Image (cartoon, rainbow, N blue to C red; front, side, top):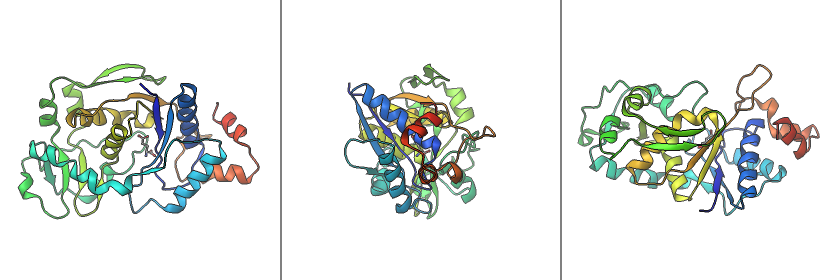
Length: 278
Ligand code: GLU
């Protein structure tokens, strides 16, 4: 099997040292194994993603000396298609409409924050049939029903330093830690990042997902979705995070560590590699 991986930034800000580490690591692993490295823009959050940020990311990756195979893939081109792909799950009775507050749903849909996995949904709307879906309702996965529909407990292989091994997703833990996640929201063209990403990893034939360990907790729900949709499960590699001097994970707002800033200060791509310990 071809080793094929991807770098999948959300273009909501400049590329910083943490992203650079992730991109270089995935790129180098692909090249070292004679495989492919793809670039995917996870730009489904139409409020926060900007073409200027995408252009800056592309420029910075190019400056770092990274090359990718094929054209850049953009999730924003596919939002209607993602939503259409949910229909079979609705037909199987595995989805329900939810009108719980927008703030809760936003929190569940937006890109993950460190230390915050899923706020497990209490199931208030679980009794509602799909026919009852009203404008503005979100669609939630009925996780218990979904797990019952699978022939066996899903599992995945992790090769990253922290959690290496085979991970079995057992029912009780999934129900306690993941719950009924929001998969999409009607009328707002928003589809949950982890759903779009699971579809794209399959569509793009990704054999290895290489990404920060802050996303490790999202892997079980992606693996469950892969099983429900009959998609393959890649091998996962969650890498260490690049932290600031206070030990906090770098975020988009940490412009001081933006690659564009280091470039302006005269750093070379080799300096960036050294800074992130490569
Ligand atoms: N778009 C996500 C982020 O920028 C990465 C998702 C992934 O690599 O699976 O945090």
